[in-house]
Image (cartoon, rainbow, N blue to C red; front, side, top):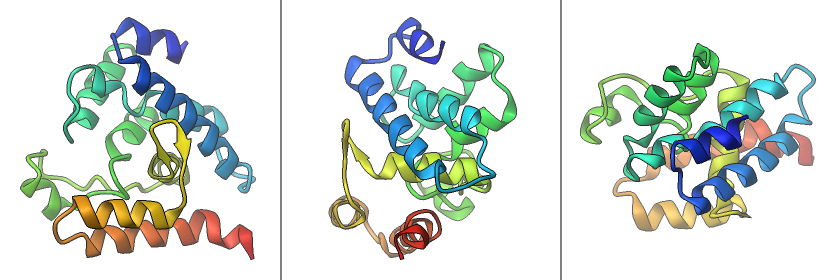
Length: 163
């Protein structure tokens, strides 16, 4: 159903491929947690970039919430869409980025899994944390706080299970 919705909203094919790859990665991460709501993760991962059917800037998360809300998705899915950007954006950072003033930092396990899976997929290919750090250092001015949150997410969701 979510793939059909992405198509109905005229989401570009490469974004749909990305969403499918993020969903696959999110399911791999979720497999490490007995308490993860995999249905919620699947829906959130597939829809996390639906806002890119309207814009490709950072506000795609806000646009995505509006679209998913229109189709009756519950608040848990909307929160995943809204909070998937980066490793989360703090309230103070949101203002400088032109977003409504609030925290976009993932709170629940499911939000964290989708956000981090999105970080670990470039296009439709899985990448490692070092790739993401290098990319963010090139693209994001004053990226230290963002990178610190990224590493914390990686430690919480990935590194714990590699030891």
